[in-house]
Length: 180
Image (cartoon, rainbow, N blue to C red):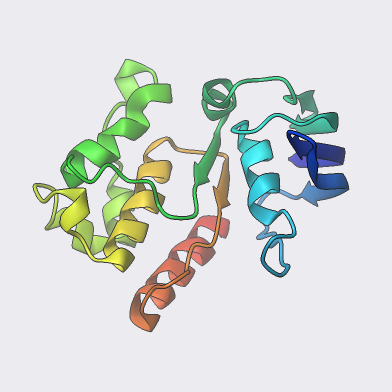
């Protein structure tokens, strides 16, 4: 499904990734582990197209996507839930979810029931502003927004960072459900 082949990534003169390779198999959970500052977020942002690579290739279903822009990768079915959530604090929960519609054809622009089955609390909060939610609720919203796109590859950066244990369990169950 996804193959990262010997990529390098630079921030100016600083090299963040050197010769990184990775394979992600369909219907499997793949984790990238490492201490702070080793390039995990840089790798995930490169996969989603948010930062260009300086060498190597990123293949998605055999197609080289190394030079595609983020919205082109999203249209192929790659969704990124960034570290820090990056929800829109002044938009309602519904409006935040609807931002996932951008890559979908008009006929598919609806909120899937699956989103509310995975995160039932969001259904009761559709009219609330995203910025008024707790950190765990914002993380659920960020994941749900990515799921609205109906992605084939869901890239999660630190999905449980700073979240209470009960919400971590909900997110874990959602990830296992999506894998299955």
